[in-house]
Length: 193
Image: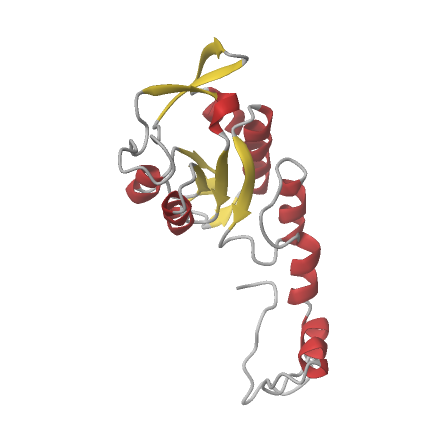
């Protein structure tokens, strides 16, 4: 249960929110930042981190920290570098499946929103071809990135290549019919990355 993962760090109440046992930054970009799970207490209302979600959230987490923001990493690996960069890490699937578990992901975002732990979230690798998951996630926390509707529009091959043609952008020849001979053609699944 993802709520259990988030709630497991709640240690009573103070200043109107749950206290969180976690690393603390001494200021934006501070060299004194405690990496990973530190020993300072913060109230949930004071956290306001950015959640980053991906199959592997390591680079997003590291970039967010470099930008001077606290980050909650959501991914399927939970590797040492991700955990070191993030103020908090939560699983949204397992490494064995190499897929984001939609139910676990949405329950995790809902728990972060309920506890006021994140301002919003950024989607990384693993959301390709899953615009419905982007939309469902944005119902819990604001999505800082491309909306599900825009992902659908860009990933629709006819719409995409019509837009390229209308803008006079050169591109290789494209066939959208499955009956064409595949000899000499690169076959692309538009739901994949």
